[in-house]
Length: 185
Length: 297
Image 1 (tube, rainbow over the protein chains, first blue to last red):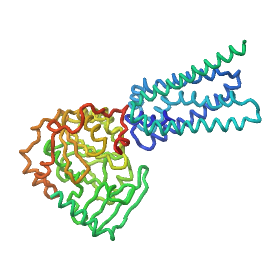
Image 2 (cartoon, one colour):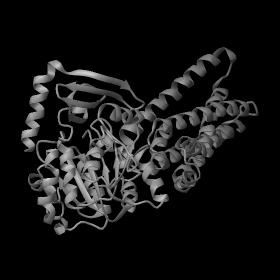
Image 3 (cartoon, rainbow over the protein chains, first blue to last red):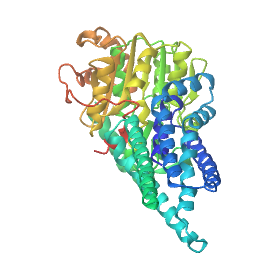
Image 4 (cartoon, rainbow over the protein chains, first blue to last red):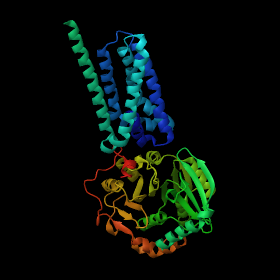
């Protein structure tokens, strides 16, 4: 959600602040999240492990980097080739946000897979997960829009997010390694 | 004169409160639009029925008369650019500026840019906004219009930025990158006039940003109002560029509109003489423009 919010700010210089900009951004986020859920669920059926889970975090961190690093020339290119700002902004949000949001979407079903021990408790686990992830989205939204944009550059905020995601990924992999070594002993 | 007309408006507002009548109301993509008649005064309002949200007003018995203080302040730009041939107005409102400038400079080309199609419609239907071969309106975001105009290698002698209202400021129309683009769209002697704020934390950030791109600038304001007009030149302002030679002629020209240019001249200041913000103020960029948050502080 933090990234989605910054999306409006990132697109505005090239595509303006008309309502359809938000239409583009929200469409792309919803579309990529839905696909992410699908892929994440599929992936979780093949020997799910904490290591893979951590790897998804790290991949998502890298997938976010182009938003900060290459958005200028990408948007310029799209601005020059598409005159209608509706399709321009749609293509731009697709280019910038599709991949990272798909990857981030994969985390939810994968978490369910890792946390569910029996079918009996699956509903409760899923419920808790929805609770945590949606609450996190709410916090991400308010913190980004109320405070982060007041203190930092858009790019710095994105680098902050990538650092946080990458660290979480590394931490997860580390934990899984330690667990494994315990199991060996 | 200004005080007088201000009192007049207050007076009109006061005696007519009972008769205030909403003659048109619609919800556009961006806001609620209200057209309200109070006796002789017709006003365009956004969102709520308070006087704070008035966007544009005119007197039905005397449509020439500029009712708003800031529209009069804007006219001081003509001391810097006496004969603008190509004019770009960003933010239409009731179309008052466009109509006035069409009368003053019938030969000039005027392009109006407005993001909200409903505002354009209301200006045409209720505010006598008129268009012809020289006066055109584009339903577009201001920043996009400027970017596209640059690609087409167009130029303007006078760009009027009037896209801000009290409720919400388009953040991408205040940044260093935006001003850079606007500067490139100005002809060599071209002038940018911005109707903007003089209160809140935003004041310092906005001022620092204009200075970073254009150097020191003229500022027009009078106490009665929270508006200020920033006037900058493409090739930089100097204290002596104010063209006082034509002031008499200009005064005569502007008199029918209720503009007393002699008195407004006294309200112009140059920031080099009295810079009213700290030198280390952070400038606004596309990366950093929490404009609406700053405006509340």
